[in-house]
Length: 387
Image (cartoon, rainbow, N blue to C red):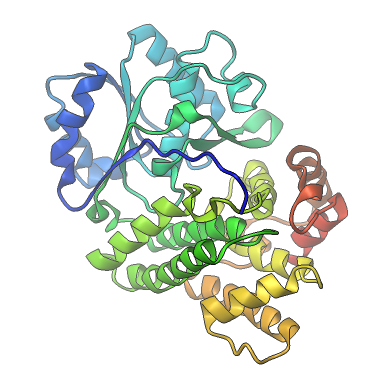
């Protein structure tokens, strides 16, 4: 087991009706609040009005219109501008992972005098950030319980994941009932995103029985409860368990002491959604089984076979390559069963920019050092297999 230094300072407030605690949660951070959110969903469900009612004694400024695959320009830059001009004390992010990721970038940028992209791209480490609280409305990314985010810069086709210990939310309010109205498409994509978060930690050189057991249980929980959430969107128990699965999936707790993973499927998908602005979870679902197939070899087969036996219940007495191939097919079939399109052409991506994207990934992501190394030609081959 490898050495590690682990801390998760975020306070999780979980369950139906816990939004009543919002004023007390916000009070220690100050009165001047930047409320960040996406489209109209929080208004349609009444959450916007509830927040305004609960925070009647606060000064609230707003940044709306944060998009999926949140954009550096305009959202991050506009948010930083508001924070500086209005002397914001605390950010309240209401929405899914995109709103939270964008708000983290704003929180750091508000305390930095240079170009905020310096922080996102890792050229400069943040020295401070505004505190952030969030109210989660979509189970998917786990951004409510980690210090990372992903931001897209449209003009350069960059989609960059960044992490900084200053960016843990101070508190996250998780009420599963706020996910009841999430469309089936986004529920499915959120489930796929969380499953891949776990896969990126599971497929590594060195792991432990403890970590493997936690991850294998989380895989099974997401597969069972993801289906239930799609079949009955108001199944509280399923929504609650899926929400907690997603929260833990990207927090790092499942891989303490493991050897590192370079998160190759995310590296590949970030190019797809940077170039074509597709739904992140759908892109991951399309890429993941093709990545598995491409990297299957004598070095990786035992790990893939273990995944097949312990997650899908495949017969361990079979040939290990047979088990691995069945596990790959079972992964594909599960994502397809959620209604996710399983080919890039179905989400508007053809072969015209594959080589360009592969070069972009190879230059930015360093996947030649991954558990299953990927060169530029490998990346292009996975993209083509996914068409």
